[in-house]
Length: 197
Image 1: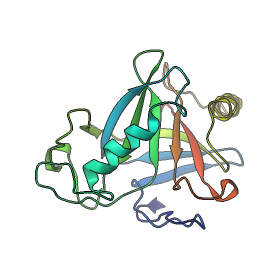
Image 2: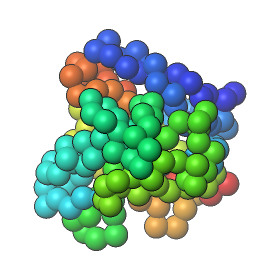
Image 3: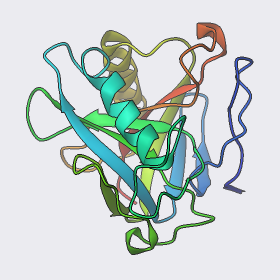
């Protein structure tokens, strides 16, 4: 089955924004295997000695939010507002203290990076992401480094038990679907690992 335009918008945790298009290939009690269609993201990097969820991630979020025009004139070359989607994706960057935050751009509007307005902030880049297959574990609560570490380990162990191979050097990705004011018990979060097809 294919998922494209569900969302999670408000304090009650209901999904209302557009989601990246994907097909669920396998579903177990512990995880789903999803095949994501090619998509486009806006991303920015940041460094933090405190990890992925403490430090400069708030400023990074606002850079991306400003690009699409959340609570401001859109910071792109045509000042064109772009709809917010879900989730917000975070993962490690190239260095030990480097991280990347990404917004998925609406697939209903943009098929390629070349179709997207150009960011006026040099720290924001637009990127084509090819189709990929990922294992996903969904959980509620607040995202913290120690929680992501535990969920990453649990997902890897479940995949290994089922004979599902992760891509070589696959790094865990963390996805959050809710605004920060959502009660922790209504938040939907995910850890993702890219796996072999």
